[in-house]
Amino acid sequence: MMKSSGHQVTQLLKAWSEGEPTALEKIIPLVYRELHVMARRYMAHERPGHTLQPTALVHEAFVRLVDTAQASFENRAHFFAVCAQVMRRVLVDWARSRQAQKRGGEVRPLELDEALVVGEEPGRDLVALNDALKVLSAQDARKGQVVELRFFGGLSVEETATVLKVSPETVKRDWKFAKSWLRRELNREMPSGA
Image 1 (tube, rainbow, N blue to C red):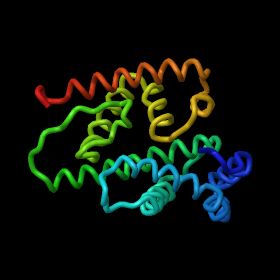
Image 2 (cartoon, rainbow, N blue to C red; image 1 turned 120 degrees about the vertical axis):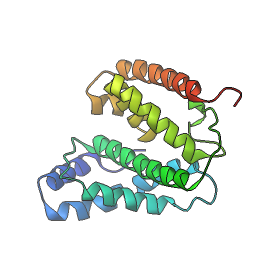
Image 3 (cartoon, helix red, strand yellow; image 1 turned 30 degrees about the vertical axis):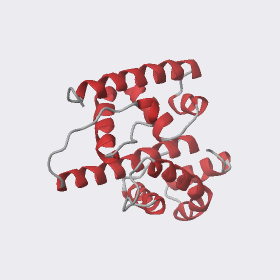
């Protein structure tokens, strides 16, 4: 996934964090394609005909990112991880607002290995996953971050290890545990007979 010049993006991110006004303008063309790929991956798990398209998801995520308090990014992997979190929040906010417009309906079980958010009601699945991920993160923040970076951010084991400043073996153990924990948590929340 990570194809743009890591050093150049990292330098521009540092300049942006330090208040350099032109840095943001220079970053956008370097990261846009990768952000669009990330958004397409997210949208592939959404229902056909979703009103939010990948380009709109990228734009909304970038607007939210720019509108937040001055961000500080360690490197490009960290930047993409934060972008993945913001995209997830955009989709969760959309799903929650859509659910608020509907009444009733049962939630079906989720399978983490099947991309977690695929189903008849992907938005509902995404909300359930988001809620379970919050619980996991409260119990073990690093394991929650591993899920964020690996599943939502699309980072490799090595990139995740770099961002979290741990060994790749630790990331692998955390990832295995988190998938198992989330699967159990999500299935426990489902009504019996679903």
